[in-house]
Length: 75
Image (cartoon, rainbow, N blue to C red; front, top):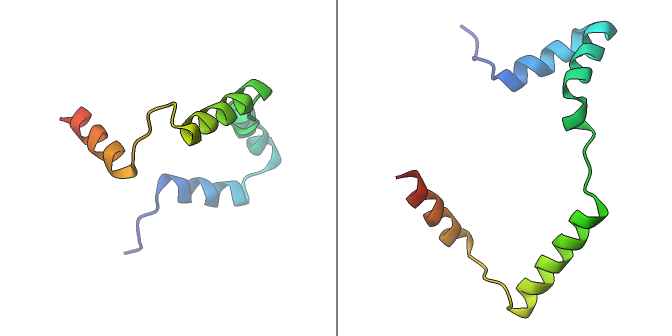
């Protein structure tokens, strides 16, 4: 009995042997998710948030605080 493969593993194996027509179909379905990038506005916002964090003008949380908050939401 072999080790069960995850969905990701199954897709990797399939992509390795699929013909070009099937690969094109898969790519077409996922193209918007594959070809993403941050806009100039996104990057500016990231820089501003970082600067706010460094200046102490925004609230920040430790990893432990974030995990605890997420766990509380789950309850």
